[in-house]
Image (cartoon, rainbow, N blue to C red):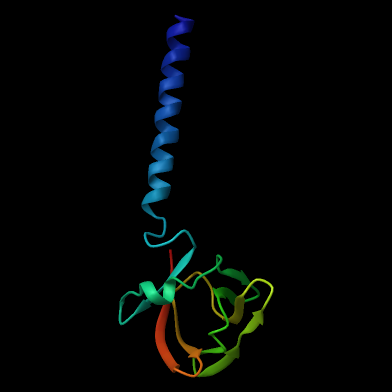
Length: 128
């Protein structure tokens, strides 16, 4: 009897763990391994999202994102400009601006690839 109970408990525990793993993956970001991605005109934007280099972090009502390369000098959020900081050692740009993971964040990302490209892109940071 004890052997049967141990086996039943083991199978039930395994089933519970499997269900939890499947439930967590159902809510995971479907596009990359980070905790956010970018949308353009309401749809996933693969090109912009491909520059995401690390998970976004939150602290004190601000969000910090890290993007690959030295192409992102600034973003605008709610009409205010927030400047990026480039780290040549890691080849990443870090930008901090107001927001939280409680809701998606509309922003305008300035992209500069001199001398060919200098444009602003209206994007939405979508939490995933």
